[in-house]
Image (cartoon, rainbow, N blue to C red; front, side, top):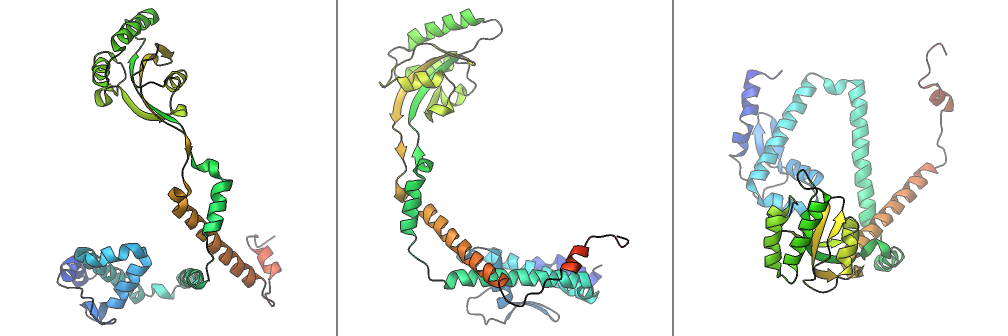
Length: 303
């Protein structure tokens, strides 16, 4: 449990750090925050930043004075908690000592691999990226799309199938030859589609698989701007569809997906480096496996 004085200091940590000003010219070991013999140095802060955020985000962090101060406060609290843990000898626990050892090993291993990646001579990834693009071109297919608006007449209580179809035919007659604004007004007046209040019947561009059949079949069969379909029945009711445009299908260009494909090749390169290094470590002469002890793990004493 914290002593009263330390509770007050922890509660006021944000006030303490707001009294500090981070300056790029500070010496590496210079104290940003001090409480008794405990200090947070520039090195501490830099290490925490480099460990906890990607490189591209670090410039924005250093430019944000509040975030810098908050991070110093976090380091203060973290350090003080660790200090108190040592005071009650938690670090002398055998289990905890092993956990700390494994955490250190994991951190150093990650740092080593990162340096391995950085120092490795990298090939030109573009040829492999282009080959990947050609082999898996279907992954970059752009489906044909059409843009349409519609009016939905539902079969519902007080309106059976025959009445719904009759109303849909009447609305279609009103829609024939209409401009988009007039069609939108008809949609607002007659459509049972709940989204009509927001989109006034306009569905924007969509691919064939996004719509139910035979709605999609009818929408994609039209070609002339402003063309109005026959009344189309789906499980939702009767539709009147107005054709408003088409985007042909095709493939995304290589340049559009180049960065992602290059990143993919870089990751494959890193994975290969890692695998080679691990295979090298596992092939060292002189590794001794205690099979008897391993096989005994988990067995009950009387087995």
